[in-house]
Every structure is written in C-alpha cells, then in structure tokens.
Image (cartoon, rainbow, N blue to C red; front, side):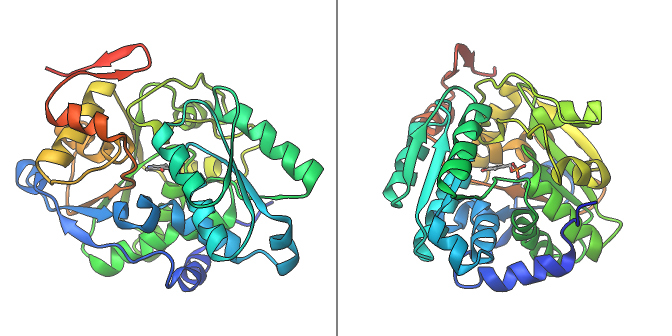
Length: 333
Ligand SMILES: *Cc1c(COP(=O)(O)O)cnc(C)c1O
C-alpha cells in the first residue's frame, strides 16, 4: 500500500512554495450572468511560467536531499511541467534535463531552454519521451520529477484546493482540466478534506484522453495521442500508475469530454468575454459551461490552468478563423 498525499502534506507544500509560486486571485467570470450562478476563475495563468505546474514541481524539488540535488533532475512533459521544473531547478541551482515529444509546441520548447534547462526531443508521444527519462535515471543517476504521478507533485497542486476554499468558503463546485490527474487529485483531495460536500468535475478532450479511458477500464490504458487544441492535456497516465488513477477514481464526481469545436468556443469566450489569454487546456471550463455540458447548483470555480499558447492560434480564434490541429481544421459556426 502506498501512502496517498493528505491535507497536511498540502499545508507543508504551501510553506515550501512561499516566495516562488504566488497565491493566485479568484475573480468573477462574465459567464456568471449567462449561466445564472457565480462562476469564479482561479487565475493560475498568473504564475511565473504561466501555469499551475510550478506548485508541484517546486515542492517536489524542494524535498530532495543535498545529495539528490547534485545528481540533477529530469522529467518528461507536454511543456508546462518541463518549464516548471526548469524554473524551480534554476532557483535551487540544480541541473535539469527536460524530455519532450515532437507534439509539444515550439513556444514551450523555447521557453524551457530560456530557463537554462537542456531539452531533448524524442518521438511523437509522452511514452517515448519517458523512455529517455528512464535511461537518464538508470545510467546517469538523475532524479525523475514526474509531471503528475508523485505524492509531492500532487501535494503541491493541492495548495490550490486550500486557497479556493479560503477565498470562497461558499464554493459548491470545482471544474478542473484533466490530463494525468495530478491537478485534480490534489485539488479534490484538499477541497474535500476541508469541505466534503464539494463537487468536483473533470474536464478533458474527446481526442485521446488516457485518464478517461483508464477510469472507464478501471486500470491504466494507453490511447493514441492525437493533436488537440488542449495540448497540455495529452499524454498517457503510465502503465504503472501509482497515485492519480486511484485518487481520481475516489475523488472525481463526474467526467466530461469535450470536442475540439467546444474547446475553440471556450478559448474564444475566455478571450472575448473574460479578456484572458489562455491555452485550450485552460478553456475547458468555459467550453463545458457554454456547451451546457455541466449543470451548476451553486457557486463554482474554474481552474484557468495555463496561458502558454501560440499567439497565432489566439489571434485566429479572436478573429473567428480556422485553426489547424494536425490535419484537422477547427472552426465552429
Ligand atoms: C498539466 C496541465 C493540465 C493537467 O494537469 P494534470 O495534473 O496532468 O491532470 C491542465 N492544464 C494545463 C495548462 C497543464 O499544463
């Protein structure tokens, strides 16, 4: 039996994050009037590096011993975790290598390099990048900082759950983007420990969600990784998944899968209604509410998880022009 992270771990993480990750604001969305409930936005796009991943990566690296830090850290990532590891490693003067598949957008690759980490690009899936991570661990003794399936990473993301209920104790519902499940596992664990009645909805894309398939199968399932507007939500959950599948099974109340057109509309609404630049992965809450896919029965928070989007994509969506996703053209009527 492994020990799952607890609310006490999340409070420890909060101390370690002070001065590195910020306590992000919770602000009212323009969607509130449209859906007839208070809709609040947790602005993780305001973190240094532009995504919540800074929380988990910082806490995990802060927990390494002096000896482990000398070996350097390595990770695979759809982009934002790599950037978070690079940022946290630089602050703590630790060498970092980030392994990325060729599906990761160029803007994220350049940002990681700019933080002084070494980038290795391997294959067309997270799983192929993960093989290189394992090699660096086995042959060079580097320390793996996984993007989601790690107790300290989950505890770091869980600090968001604490902040949400401190800033809005009336909250009834939290809508969370889902990929590997570190974010939702942490947030749901902390939020339900503080307020057991709170409802947690997972949102992800129809195209290639490994966690959705794994929750349905009751065990880790690999799915083909496909290009999507929500590129930060791609990737497998690992066939030896230890924490997040179990925690998602226990803590997630409902799961909604969104089409690329719905995500496009969500990004457009974030931009035009709430005036926020965010990734497709961060727009799934808007997408689900606009598509009428989630019913709210009280004040709700949407996690606006990251803003590291290609600006050409944002400009096209603002102008209501088609966006190319692999060989798909997305442009809702
Ligand atoms: C990583 C990420 C997610 C999903 O987090 P998981 O812990 O993998 O479920 C959502 N949004 C953004 C912007 C991310 O970078």
